[in-house]
Amino acid sequence: MRANSRAAIRLILMLGILFSSIFSPSSASFAGQAVSKYPWVIKKSLVLCSLFPTERSMSVEGELVFDKVASYSEFLHFGISPANLKLKDASGKNIPYKYYEDGGICLTTPLPIGMNTIQFKFQHSFPASDSADPYFFVGEDFTNLEDNNAWYPMIMLCLSINGKYVLPAPHMAELVVSAPEGYTVIGTGKKIDEKHRAGRVTTYFKTEKAIPGQLGVYAGKYKTIHGTSAGVNFSIHVRKGLDFKRASEIKENVEKILRFYIDRYGFFPCSALDIIQRPYLPNGNNYSEAHGIILINGEDVFTKSAEEVAPAPASLIAHEIYHQYICHMVRGTGFDRKLFTEGMTCYGEILCASSILDKNLIIKAIDLWALIIRKIPAATDVAIAGISKENPNLSRYYYYKMPLFLLTLRQCVGDDAMKKFERSLLKKYGYKEPISFTEFLSFLKQETGALPGASKVFDAWLNKPGLPPFWKPEQEAAQIR
Image (cartoon, rainbow, N blue to C red; front, side):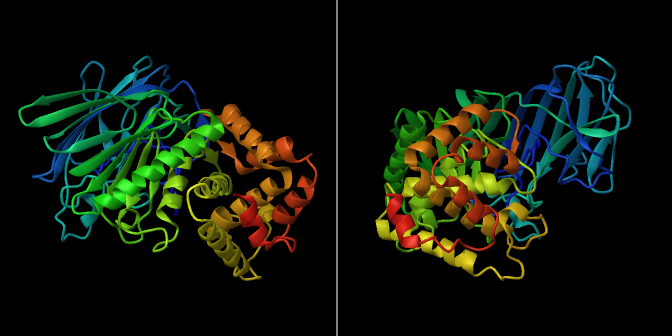
């Protein structure tokens, strides 16, 4: 995504709606210890959500099934701290819990050994649009979300075993969403059924793979454009009142983007792709969610041309679609993970956009990236190899220096060598445990480091601050076409 957001592991239930079936303890203020991984913890999850736009409310219930359990205590964190939360075990007995000061919820007694199911249920009403937090629900949209802010109801489940928090392994998830007729519902996973009854539509989704990322569901009143490219079906959901003609132009670009990536890698990670325009949020981000869902903040992508806005709409869409490969299929970990995830994605964006946009736009974008790096104050500019999480220039290294390094390496070793590396990366680490930036670099050096000139590129870009003296933007841009 093109902005700061937390690639945490979590179960999030939010109106908009974002349901996540992976959990993260990182943002909760509980007394944390080291995180341990028990790959056997979560087997599957089932979430059912009913949306009531007129009443500005929703009801949520779900079930978490564990593959194997020991005696442990659980920690649930709700951003909204619902007072009407009910927790039950598989036998239907209430599970007692208490609230922490920060809104977290902890079971007062551990589940018995062998108990493998937790059921939860709550209702939530959204604030009025003139309240302090108007972003829960906007107009007729359930997609006005912003990560890393408490603008949505949230559940995080963190298991605690012997005082250490546990990250659940990827698992299968099922989702059922009920909404009024006239609403389009988009969900993570494959849509397997839809039923209409008493003025409501109920849509059923099931993940095609064990989910290592977020499971998202969104609902709203949209105009929808459908298309297909290289065997992948896609839909563009535009809010009423926007430029439908411009959205049709976006359709043509999406066709080209999918075709480029599928030609390069031989596949697309999802069977379908949904691009959703959401109401504009000040300082809002664009997001690529797991299983082929992309959220676009505001109207610019659907109303302006490549000459009117930067990055160009096609380039921005190419960026978010590439995240389906890097971020969701191959995940990063560590404070510097975006050097890998955003660096690779911006690199892939430029490769793809160069097949769609005018050459001068690509040169302009690359020159801007170089200018941003040159403007880093010398006192705070460091080599990528020496970056710390306190460095104030992290985002500049993520989004600009790393992709410039990768483009330079491609110019040095050739596109065939880089394509081979990219395919090997997806094959080796796809749908596996997250990898660190150090692991990414090690694999990159293993695959390309012995090629002529590569060692010079690695040293100049990673071990020294600033831009290498031999780097020439105009030659770089010309080589990527």
